[in-house]
Image (cartoon, rainbow, N blue to C red; front, side, top):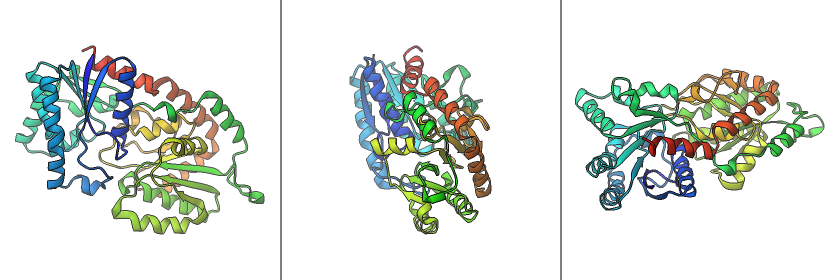
Length: 379
């Protein structure tokens, strides 16, 4: 099968770009001929505010992939076109030429939305714009969402037979082995929140691995950790990701206040990222990000035996159950995050085992690629 993928690829590192990179490699390994068009209009991380702004630069940067993509569909003899579009109205429209040309060439074209914002965006539009979106949604061969809870985004817009579910997956390099999990649990049998004799090797380690954005809850997490520090609850907070420009000064100030209890690791990948995932106990993402779908970082944490603290934002409910995978917290609520950390600490081993084996069974790269193949190749 010859497949054309169109969407963002690293850099910058986002859940969607990482997912596309993983799928590209997996499809090739499974014997498919795959080409891709990188639709990124920006090569650096942009804040939520900047993402929603119109700019001539972004428009010009978008023209090249549109021209190349349409040319490839017209003359490349592809069997399938797979597109991961944006969730904003204008952002989505730049992908419509691919849908039009694929339809003209009678090539099946699937849209994969990596988020839970589509319906909110659709409902905010006037009737004319809604009609335009509905036309293109129905013109596609099918739409893929990240979880069952997100199927309802297309109620009244698209027939349910054309909406498919595919949960995200985890790259092999960020999944620990069963032997490594066993070693981790043995090492942390005496996990403590006390630093008697100044031995901090078994102090509770908390990981935030995502872009440091206000709407991802980073300031609330740091506020919660400041509260823990005041209570003399011993922990270490590890932060990794780009910092949103609008909160850079505040983040740096809070890092100074946390002192030795925090480490900012910058943007991580490869061995450094794998080490962070392996060496931490709790993963915390108290997000209220409006575009949130199903963060790959949560699945990566599960695949490394971390307890999870997160909200019910977006499609989170499809991969996270309160009391099973960790503890639910509430957006913009540092106190609930602080209490969730204490509860996860008390029941760390149970959450670690549950999450690891659930990820191994459902969210491996192999399972993710197979789900996509079953949707786009067998329809």
